[in-house]
Length: 418
Image 1 (cartoon, rainbow, N blue to C red):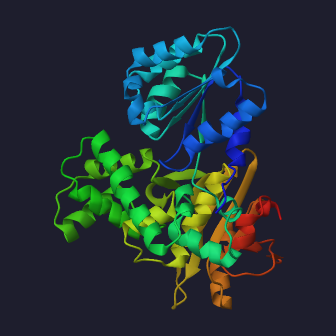
Image 2 (tube, helix red, strand yellow; image 1 turned 45 degrees about the vertical axis):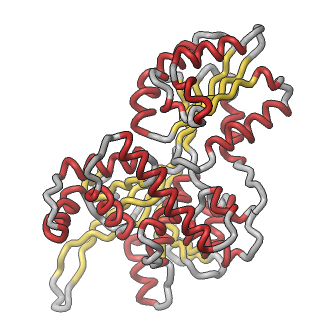
Image 3 (cartoon, rainbow, N blue to C red; image 1 turned 90 degrees about the horizontal axis):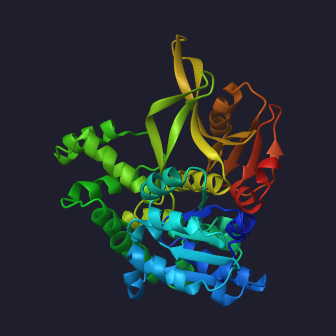
């Protein structure tokens, strides 16, 4: 596959240039943050006339730069590079590896002719220390693995073949450099164990890690299912004979979220206009890592497509919740009962809102009725959409519900407006 231009993120960095704020590029490890900053953005700066000696780059993860993890050494190095009053662009990769980095960045902010960009791979670490510390002087650019549209911009095969591989191996950019199935599997499994998992264990000093690993397996097997720490703790006690506590499970889930491995979707009562705190749904930010974790055993496309749609909505900048809408129904004896119907996703961005159902197959009228039922109970005027795994033209029924194929949804940047 040819190099992929991460245009969305590059354009955002360009729009933030010289705005007096620290630009903080966050996201999971190996999703392309370093490539964006050190390759794409540097190329843009040089093409726009910035001299190479006015671009100061430090990769703090690189062993040869280990002395730069000392704040005094890094500050002295940057100062030594600044020899005139022209603008200098300071680019620091994996900022969380620099001790007392907030003090260093505060120092750089006080220098008039600096424009500062940093990357980081831990949400809690960065949000606690950067966003709070700089109070409106830090701007976060959250980066995700490749979208399907980015993936297909360089994929040599058919859309269907690309979709199948994307669902199986995910969108981490490095996956494209491996040619065989065995190489891709080995890369993803090693990356999960030796980078993501090791980082969590080291960062939070987890010594007895059996429960953490089992929790990850349970969450990988249950993507898109409603759960919470209490339910998981009960499962550990009944099935695993483990006394792990609610608090420990909650901490472990927070660690996975902070490392950008998973994201939490909260339920929202559409009629009551309020959030329902528990249970939640969790989605993996990269399907390849999720599949590698469970040895590619569970490839149920219904849940994988739901996860994929969630990720696409987040890439597009939407806040995404799981919707519930009350419904009165009748049982076989004609007796009424109340239940909650689920809308897979409520996505909001500014004044925009969409209700979206993920339906891999709608092979019968009964299945179609099931997918439409919750959307029909939503009585506002925002657009309601069913995304199906089947190829076919976009349709709109008498109730105004749009049905669109997952391919059109993913590949057309205005697909929600069609």
